[in-house]
Length: 171
Image (cartoon, rainbow, N blue to C red):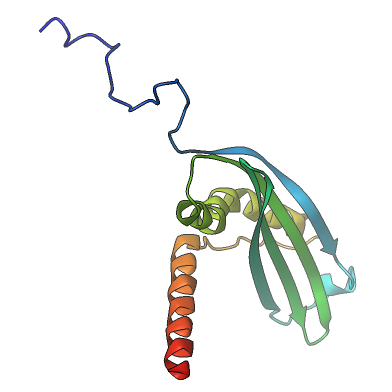
């Protein structure tokens, strides 16, 4: 009974005998704008256009290892607004983050770098895009949330099906 209120207790964390920290750890070190381009090629005429613009939004995710425990994620977003009269605006953003990973296996690191990490930094990139479009003289472009985890697992499943089909074709 005396131990019930004791906040210092043995949590059985399975620490290595030499005190080495072997527990998996992932953390966001920093995030930053790596590249931002705002083009407003037809201003001020484009402000008078009444035709509904066609919006094209593309995004891509890249990751690379900078050091054994440090990785960089790049979230690339291109947003273009065009009408039959021309391009109203084009925004290109590369938003990046440094991720620290220690004692994480490759099969756990890959989904974090290509799904969970981009999910964490997307709201910041979304705000930069909205502000850039607004600062170009248009209503802010509010990008819808993206299900990065769903996209990651869908691409993984598609890749596995392609590999199975290629393997079945060789048999």
